[in-house]
Each structure stands twice: as C-alpha cells, then as structure tokens.
Length: 424
Image (cartoon, rainbow, N blue to C red; front, side, top):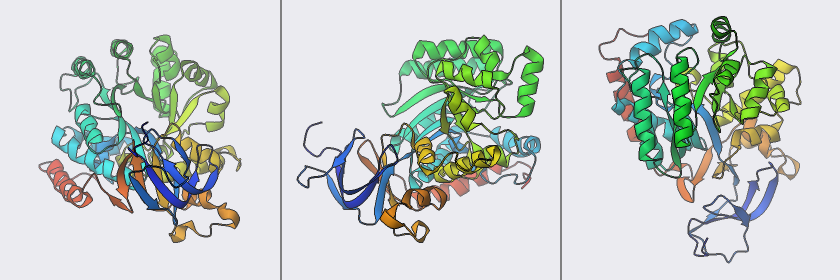
C-alpha cells in the first residue's frame, strides 16, 4: 500500500485485542487490508481518533442467517416449531417481494453494523437484492439463493427455476470483492437427489460455495436414515455433493463419523445456539467433538425470526454457556477461545465503548475486558470494513436507522395486509 494514508486510521492511547485474543495498549494504525501496527505518530493517515475509552477488536462474522427475516421478528412467540412455520412463516413468505426483502435486509444490516458484525453468510430469497444491500452499505457477505424443489417467492416454478436463476447470477460474476453469491440448497428433505447434484455441479463450475441446513432436528435425521439408510451428512457425501468451503448450518444431530466427513471436505459447521434452543431442536452441535475431529466450527445467528436478534456477542455468550452446560465442563470455550470463534476469519475492526458500566470492573491490568465484552456486552462505537468507516462514535454513517425503522414498520403492515392475523 502506498504510504499516503489511504484507508488508514490511527487510534491513540487505546487498547487492541489481536487475533490471538491478547490485549495490547498504546497508539495503533489500522490499515484497509486488515493489518495493524503500533503507531510511531508520524504516519500518513486519513483520520486520527482518540481511543482513550475504547478497545479495538476484530469484527464479528455471522456464518448462517436469513437477513430479511427481520420482517418476521417476534412472530408466533411460544409456538411449537411446526405451528410456528405453518401459521406464521409460510403464510407470510408466500407474499414476499423483492421490495420487502430489500427493506428487511437494510434493517438487518443496520443491526449488524450497530453490533459490530462485518460479514454475513445469508440464505434467503431474492439473493441479488440481498447482495446489493450488503454492497451498498459496505459490508461483506455471501448471498446464497435458497434452492428447494417446491415453489418459493423467488422461484415460483421450483427447483429447476431456482438453479437456472442462480446460474445466471453467477455467470454475471460476484457483485464485488466483498460480496459473493452462493447456492443455498435448503436441506436434504427439501431437495431431491437430482437438485442436490445439479447444485453441486454449479458450485464447481462457478467456484462458489454451497450452503445448507444440516441435521438441525431429530426428525430430519431419522427421516433421512429411513429413506436412504444414511444420516444427512453421510447421504450428501455419498452423492459427492460437498465442494470447497461448504457451509453446514446447525449440525445438532451429527455422528462422529459424519464429523470426520465434514473435516475431510473442509466444510464449516455453523453453531446456532440461540435459534436451536428457541425452537427446542433438542440437539446441540458438540464443539469439543467437532474440534477433536478437525472440523472448522463457526458461529451464526440464523434468522431474526428464530433468534429475535443478530447480535453476535449474545450468540458467542450462549455458545460458550450451552457447550459448558451440555458437557458438564466449565473449561470449554473460555473467553479467548470464544472470541476467536466469533471473529474467525475477520480482517475488519470494531471499537467498543469502555465508558459503559457493563464493562466495569476492568480488573488489574484491565484483564477482565475481554470477558466483559463477551458476557456483559458493550456498545459498538466504531466499525471499519476495508478501510471504510461504517459507524463512528456510536452513529451508523452508511444507513439511516430512523428511516429504516419507519420503512420496516410500514412494510410489515403491508406484509400482513389481507392475511388472517398470525398467532402471536
């Protein structure tokens, strides 16, 4: 990079938590390429900021979500999964439009920026709209069009149309270096063998990722075994379905043999504790077993409909707590490992407000800062992506939160217009 200050910012008298979750103090330079260094004070920078009451960290990565489902947040609270889907989600999604996806995705992006997340692996309808919103507001993302054999809002003719449209999008090329397209084969129970194979072929042809819900519920696993004589991940492996960097969401009912399959393919297993607990899936991704098998584990929120939020700090906290609880071991996912899990792969930066009562006490040598961030939380003050400030001093610069809030309320009213009131 030329030493002209391009995309470079200096924070003075601050703290920085590095990729190994080690705390540093001093003046720091953050470069647009994601690198950092101690500042001598004489470098060319675009901006110098007082970091006296801030701590700099890598931003969060949300590896499984349905962003526009902010439209469905808090619908059908307290209902069993089947009723929640059949009485709330499915009836409304039949009316989903590109305009509604645009509004819902804008609201989701505003929420991610406000809570320190710079990347989302999304799987939702109208992926071109999702990609455009991510691109316009400066975030990183993977916009995966959902593939199912049954008709959907994006693809009324079903799986063949879905694959054809994704093929066309991929032929046009990725929107940018920050935002890519992927193929979201929904699940083994919504995609035929033919659909799965065609999706895998497209993934290889275009060099894009596959994204799937895998072994989320006991019924899904039992039904797959009854039909194919194999569990879901075994079945996908038997089809030679996996491609580079495949994203497998949930993985709550997975055998150790299947974990070895995931590791062998370099797949990402995405832990979504909030959604799985809220929907009473019963099974929890086993972090220790996955790590022992060599699987790359990531964190995701799932959609705001099944989570109520997109705050990755809360997801990291719940991941740590449920793993300890389920395995009767309070040493699993300590604050450093939890933070590394939640920020894995990030090259962007967030700054957190230390002048927040939830960040006190900081402890001797401020050694409690990281644990406070995970278990107590704090306000995201700044967010930097590829050298661009998306948020500064607690204010989002790239989206108007007030306008988005009004648009979201109007959109939801339109979404329900003419539909029997959903169960709430």
